Amino acid sequence: MAEPQPIPFATSTPIADTMSGAAVYGPIFIRFFYDTFVLGFSFTYVWRCPIQKLSAFFTSNVTGAAISRGKGTEKQPFRLLDIGVGTGYHMQHSAIPEDAHVDLVDLRDVALGAACRRLKKSHPTVTMQASLGDFLEEDENSGMAITPTRFPGRFDAISCMLLLHCVPGPPSRKAGSLQRLAPLLNPEGVLFGATILGKGVNHSLLARVFMAWYNRTRKFSNEEDDVERLLEPLRRTFANIRTELVGDVLLFELREPRC
Ligand SMILES: C[S@@+](CC[C@H](N)C(=O)[O-])C[C@H]1O[C@@H](n2cnc3c(N)ncnc32)[C@H](O)[C@@H]1O
Image (cartoon, rainbow, N blue to C red; front, side, top):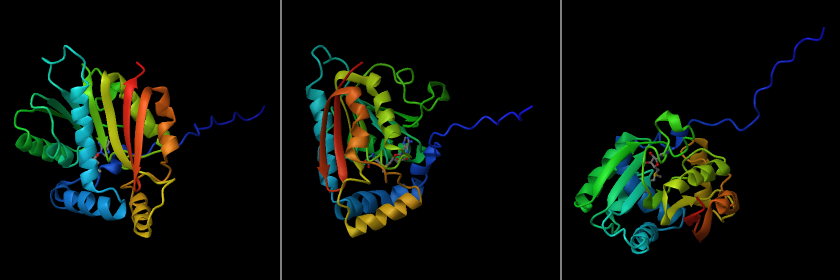
């Protein structure tokens, strides 16, 4: 009799540890290096998308969402969900409606603490809730997924600034995470973000060095990320997609969720 054949393992891409993109965000990095080195130096001189551009993009999406809110919502607080909060830099420097409620989500409690402190100082009237959560988590029962059950009601704006290039790929997995956020978005709302691309852009020599080092040490996982691979799945979920390429950085705005 023939020997039974072993059952082959599934051949899909192994899912890397989602913590890899968040591991560097410890207290010292957050306190001393993130704003100056990452936002100040790298985004201007390496990725050629100055921090002022990113902050203006954040502000225009939040204020735009506040204006385009449907009639009859005046009495409800403006709701913003910020995923991957870092130090809270953009929230600090952005105009956020005074009556807003902000949900902050990150894999690291250090980041959540820093961003909450900043937000409280810069926008004292805004209410906030910090939650540990994983942008990539698909299992609704894990306690880390960002789902309508954990965050009931809909958001006027959802931001994922500078998050996608940090999280493990492939690009379809990152797009899938954005697609899963669609049911949390108001019909007039916006899901927006910015991410450093690994392909389809003209990296400078300095950018190539940073790309290689960061991807090797798994601080970034963006070598496969290009505009088309990120956006193609999203066209099925959002009827209105706007993008802009600034240096090596893709700015995206997703509107009109088809759900
Ligand atoms: C590059 S920082 C971006 C911070 C901020 N949004 C900004 O634009 O300056 C990435 C942030 O995402 C968080 N992060 C990384 N992987 C994550 C994941 N899978 N789920 C949620 N947050 C994650 C990190 O802890 C860090 O706070």
